[in-house]
Image: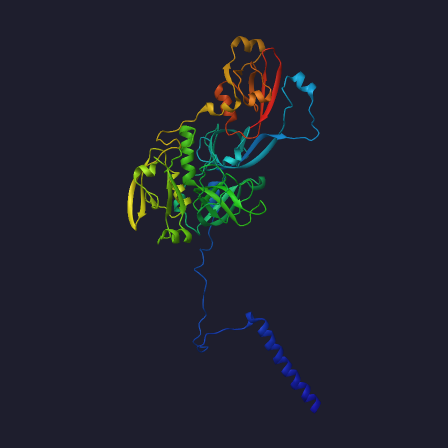
Length: 483
């Protein structure tokens, strides 16, 4: 009996010991209370107000998905083959001055947004850069050949045009109205999966990620957590009303695929770029003429600055717009017009919406007091004139002059188009082996009838260029070179 009682007491003691150890190792199973009585204890709720449940994105998706297109580009890429040795006989008989590079057709794809019923499409510059042909496919699988109206590498935007009417399009919204935490949809064609819609929230605004390495590049991205992947570039970021608020452009990723954050160009920048390209064929970029930097703790200590918002004027362009208006080094720019200028990307975004010659009020803090100056913005040349696209700029690299082919010569050679090469200087044509008198009939498959056709065929071209033509003796040939 004594032995049984001892075992029973030992079992109870072991149970209490086990329970105590379990509660110690697993505290989440333990109850915690305030130091008051149990009756007066209240549960503490650390959660913020929950978001609205049951948000319906079907209307926004329906309003936008038909206006987003699949953009497919074709271009020539130079191929270096280890086994492709120099062949003097080939060069002798072809008349080439040396071994010619080989080019292989390549296909790439992205997205675009139809912005008008008559066929204007906005996309990213990097989607169509260097393309020989651009084709768009609508949500109903109709296909159109697209013409590149113009591009702006500094904002990574491009404007296309297709010959069609009555197209579905996405209406402009206002990216200034976007709030952090607001729902948005990303519409595009990731991995060639057409008409894909993903949802997320705006997680930040005026984000600079230093992805655009162009001189005078503008980055003031809308950051979202809507899933965006390769192929989404140039697609639409829309709000819950289906209005266009951004052009999806980049992702932050270590793998090349979506890993949490995506970035879109604000539609208020895109709209201005599109208007410029439609009217002038060239973006009318305005400059305020200042060197600027964000205010951080180091600068604040160094310059004894008490404010945390605004953009510090670190230097001025001699004779520039800001200097002429009376702004000086050390001023802190706080407003561009009625819009706050809290950081560098925000200021750059505001200035990017104006054209040279525009007069804008700029508010600065100087010695703790606000001052407002009227600044007349300048262009890159330092004046207020509108810049019209120079068609000769693309031709200069070729190192030649051109003249139309006479009707008699076209009849003799049995051709109906072409521009004759005259006055060769040091340039791409001479390096490729082209001789004077050669008649260019096609560049990258595009017919050449005028000097403007040559310029347009080379516009924003990077990589391989394939030129077809004929000599006055009737010898047809082609040449390739890289830009």
